[in-house]
Length: 431
Picture 1 (cartoon, rainbow, N blue to C red):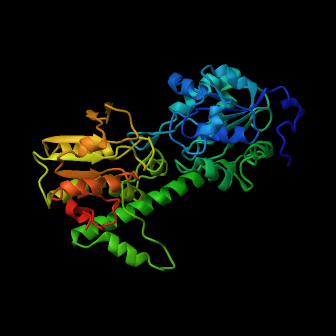
Picture 2 (cartoon, rainbow, N blue to C red):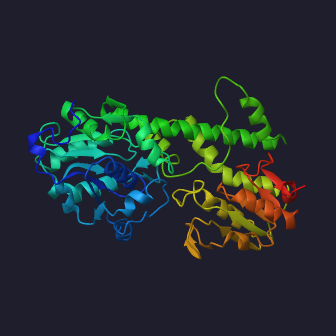
């Protein structure tokens, strides 16, 4: 195989190597990483505010490693789909969420395909990049062959090449992780490898559905792993045992599987991907059980704190709202669910703080919540819930403890290293 984009003469007429459709948290790091490797890239997105931010040379979200690359303003993102006609490869990174009834929602992919259809050109590679349910790439193949004059593998080409990066580690992992290429004709596989070998030296070829399952299995395995850790935390607290001590002893020099740290498990991948498998099975299984366990953790924190103290008419602070530490991503966070359970106890006041998010107000999906600065949120708080393990919170909580030793702290992340999910703040006071 050759690693040159112009390895086929009839691809010379394309002005760009790649158009990335969807320049969010998946598409933008990929576009910038490809550009850094000498690939000519343009972007397409419908979010005008996002487009303006990128074209001004600024990252619209936190992702280390890309500030200097984007500051060159060499990546231009467009809002008109006609721009895809200028690119040899069209990389589609739009989302594939679930409907409420454990059913894959293909509407975003359908919408993009419909908008791109008039501008697709002969010999382009269409590459799906987002997490998709089994059968989605085959659906796209059938759609292209019904709705256009193209035949996949003959005069247009198709592959599914899943991203498997962790948020906050895109710059490193786009180069370090092997790339899976799902294609069902030789030419499509070659074209995808020619592109992704610019980023990584290890490429695996497979069929559509196997590539789709690789990504789903990676995410679901982590989800079940974390669900088990959370169930262990619940069991330990029920027996008045210390999950952190148990975990430390169980994992020490143990040569087999390790017990994960408990905590909120959320985000747009881990929290929904099990449903893309369960859609095709009517039976209860460990994936549904893992989902129930993960979703129960906010209720566990509130109900087990109530065994120790009352939340009614108390001042409650909640630290963190994003789904992951030290990011500004709120998608599918469990913090809104925690807030709703706290609200049911009718506290005197709930004060939320997340320094990674704008102030003063944003919506939590239930009611408008004021986003305080951290010091104001903690002022005279009787109870503090650590919803997100932002790295700054450990020192903030230790400072808080000096003047509020009797306040209760709920810290499933064990940020302060005191090995207690529920304890009063005096456990954090400096000796």
